[in-house]
Image (tube, rainbow, N blue to C red; front, top):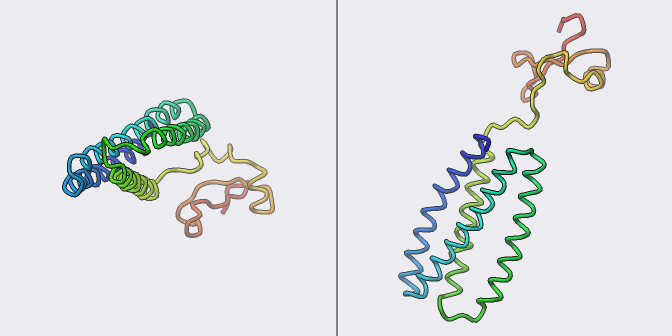
Length: 174
């Protein structure tokens, strides 16, 4: 798994765990034993579902970015179908408090998703892999960007803010 993915996973677990503990304590206090059972089942559902995603997408990340995206979409759809079956199956149960189960699951899902979004947004991940050298830059890209036959080379000192690139003429002058 890429390091940024592991870091996002670690922060998601660390920020979701307190929310899960808080929900179990609150549901146990307000709902009694059935509230406690419902809350524990909600935490278990979220843990299992996100665990499946982490394992599946992590394995696919070793293959390619495309495989990772396809795996994420497929696991999402399968989990939605499984959740629909579970909700239908336990709709009238009296073994646990289904409202506290749902409330705990929603809180844990929101905590996990928010921590993933925040951690991913703060991560400095390259969106485009850099070329091995200036000669490997696309001549068509350089021609379109400069209006002539120029190569593209990285230069942080003379690039406009946020651009990270400057254009170099074929003779090497800027």
